[in-house]
Length: 191
Image 1 (tube, rainbow, N blue to C red):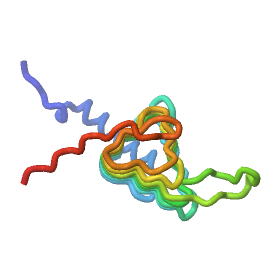
Image 2 (image 1 turned 180 degrees about the horizontal axis):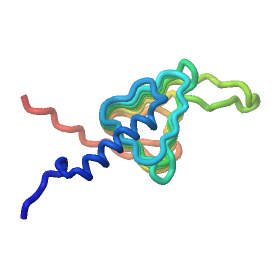
Image 3 (image 1 turned 90 degrees about the vertical axis):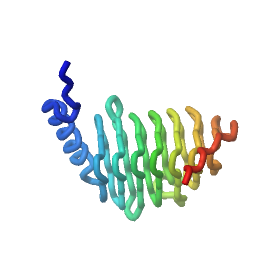
């Protein structure tokens, strides 16, 4: 049986070109979009500051839109090869940085602000930067609040609310998120 390589099939090539072209169109309000961005479904972008998306990022807003927002002067940065699932909202009033090779589960919220004071709904509170380092996995419905740093290789269990820093290579979960156990660090590459 004669097998034609996947990339040589005309229909597949046309679909892939269309997908990548539409992905760039959907992310046109971003300040910088890396190569091979892949957006499936809806992406809502409100860019008042600087918004950067790295190479080979995949955003899946197929049944619920993904929302990316930055206030004037804010910086929102998403690293290369990161995957963002449906219903995720990321908002930067000051700074939100997501590293490379991260996975963000359905309906997760990442924000560096509380949006308003308790007694003064029109007053913006102080924002504090959020940093999610490389190789982090946020399961479904995780909430990351302002001023939090999540260390490299950490895993946050479904439904957790992260209110303080998470050490590298740990598993946390609960409301508020607490240490469940340490994770094995990957072996150093042989030289």
